[in-house]
Length: 294
Length: 294
Image (cartoon, rainbow over all chains, first blue to last red; front, top):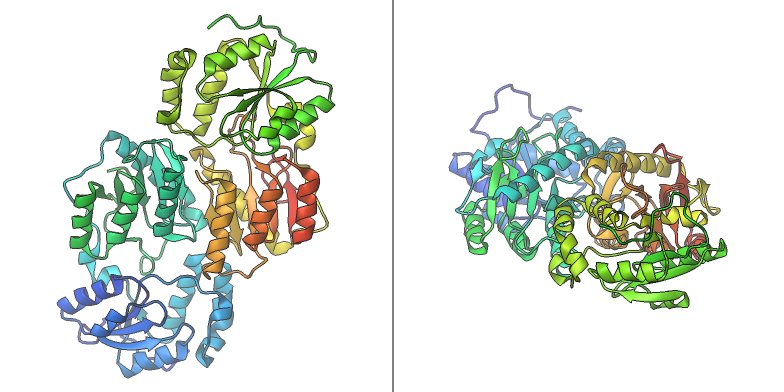
């Protein structure tokens, strides 16, 4: 494909960056971080997913499947760099309203739909790159939002929690080749829940329900949520993220804390998250990215 | 420990067999099958789990943790062979009322509680064996209840379903070392759900909910439930089982069918299951036990 802005090797920080906004508070956090670093941002808010607050910034609403419109907006705004960020539930193909550009791209996207998430995202990235745009990871634009290594607050994992973290990391690593979820819950080295299409919040709700029904052997306050990026994941998409709702979910599920990969996990609202974790008495720890227990 | 019946190398078919009954219809099916083969059965029905219908057979109700009482009943009934069968939710240690024999065995059981299910069951088996009893697999007493190889009814998996089955089997095999669940749902080679502590029925309910919320990309009527025993599982315990409720769950979840390991999966009510599968238009297939797709 052609017609995109001319390719340059070094992106200019003078150019605005386009942020394609899915759900949650992460798009806002990324936009704030980019703005703080002196970069102008243009929000492309996905209808049905993006938080209306993204209109705090320069903003256009877009529909999923409006690929031609997105390309046009990007050119009109002189954006070459694009960030994809925020939750976007997997859409059923039948519900998409495609414009002509999207229709022409359809065979590629359909092929990608048949694979796992990774294939889908990589294929969408290529569509943009072929049109002359550059996909940038939110972690490059807003590195301050990444979870640091070590414990965030005053609560820390004890020896049993560390054993559970290690078990969870090993399990996630075994799941790597299958493009499954990015999180598990382990208590007393017993795997309580494995995340797939439902997402972390729903998995934690399930753990809370299992706890209520007496189907978890370990006591309340035991067990950990372990999150890690998929081993071969393109980090420009879909890095794991945690936020205050994750802490609320942990507390309801009666877990001791959460471990996630340092440098590869977004913290949507760090101050709020820390406040919530301290109040709930749960630990939040960044594990080294080589996958060993902290 | 001593005091059990004297050990003999060849169990006599004249002796009654004790069936420790958890929930579901499988204990009844095993008792019927054993009776048909001319073996007398004594049901030890676990209170809170066993179906009251087990009283059709000679029956004693027992509480979890009443190990001494169970040993006494077994001796009084002159049972040497014991089968454990049927669903038993993982009990919270605190809810158990232990008799003295159980209290003495507690340190061993507690150690086992810290491991996964496999450890727990193996440790319980040893307690019985040390007391002079013999744990027999339900599949040895009632081999007719095992799923045969190939399609059960008129519906068969198509090529896409077979690819999903293969993907699911590979995933279950990767999960093997972690003593997790025994089932996954795969649709379009995308892993929708992984079973852990919640069990198959609840996992299928989750898939139905994800489908309702538009969070599953593949169409209604696509995707498979794949079940397999854990690779190193002691087959005397906890072989996977399927029954009419599994078919109902499949249908609600909008799946095409289920694949489970031939010769290592119980079918609780084969006639009812087949009728339900035909009515729902889903396939039920026994996969070869070496783990390849059918």
